[in-house]
Image 1 (tube, rainbow, N blue to C red):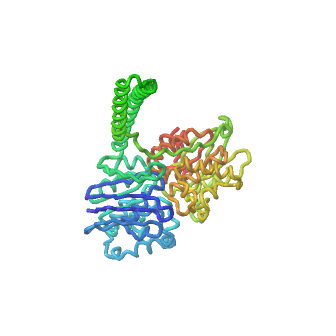
Image 2 (image 1 turned 180 degrees about the horizontal axis):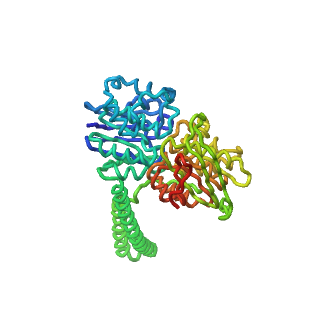
Image 3 (image 1 turned 90 degrees about the vertical axis):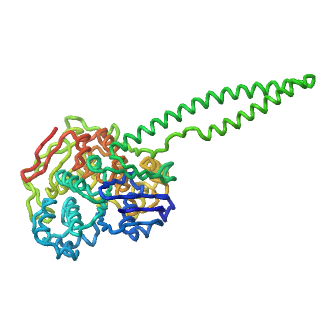
Length: 514
């Protein structure tokens, strides 16, 4: 059992309450997903559960963590920099228990993740692995440690569809506790039997959480149904209040008018009118008490909004955006051929997606395509890399990063846009390095929106967005009037957004769906 009692989390810098009096009990068999909009504290909560010292620099925390005999295993959202420098062998051998495992036991673990038995002894650096390979390697180390609680922060990031299926099986087969964060709605729908929903409502001035022992889709449906019922009751109460108040005002005005016109020659009439006024005042006080119990409109987090492109971003159907030819795709170090005979042609406002196994070279290929398109003068291209830090200046604020002119009106406009993406005024002044992965992604999205681009080049665009933001992002890109060239393993993104799907393999790019 893992229990959290009366946990309060407050951001030290802006004093924003992330969680207030949070209580949670997890037992063997629970597969709990933490959901919430970007920047709501999902990763912070998970870090605190694993090791409170990980958040003490920026979070004021008090509460009780009861673990019993549980052994926690934590997969961070991003691999630690110091781990990237290690060889795979060094990474595994740091665990004392690694030396106690028999070759057969290691073989079983390797087999679970589709790795060769000698993978544990490789001299390849961790930093040189593909995103998906990094995730699998970290998960394998958790298995070697024989943990009983899996704490997984975005485990679905950067892993291919085959590995996603494997991850689903690992979570579903796990007999103990799994607590995870993921943007992948399909993964959540297929695995989670419990939802922990962290919210920041009323423009992030009030923290709220919900713990529901329900599958994700059922939770969302019941939540929407509950909100709709409450909304209709609130609207009905307001209609009745309006009718009641109008009737009351007519009575009040009638009595007031009669009192004004009453003369001293009719004292008995005046007394009756004053008695009637007392009755009317008593009625007003009763109405005020009734209004206190009136059904309130449901409080929900405002949806994010940003528009990508305008009429100038439209590309004529007959225009060739790119016709790309590459005889050989090699690894960045030039030591290995990844694919041969690559050909890609995109016309007009096509939305295409490239898929493939981890390590197939998708990101390497997309970078090459981006290099060509970003240097073109007949189109305006923008690139969103998998690693946001490649473009972001982590030491400046979102406003300073997006402001190209220093003009007061421009900065006001940027603040308005950031507000539509649910940034608080304080968050707009935080250095970008202090923001969550999803918030960093929003900065890049806004940059693309402000640039007037008509071609978007996106490497895993939904990887850090919550499942609640996912539908908004997909709709936004679907309605973009220009072309989109993307890599994704997000199955809902592929289904909802892409006109054509290409698979990268050693024989090149194969069109598998259109």
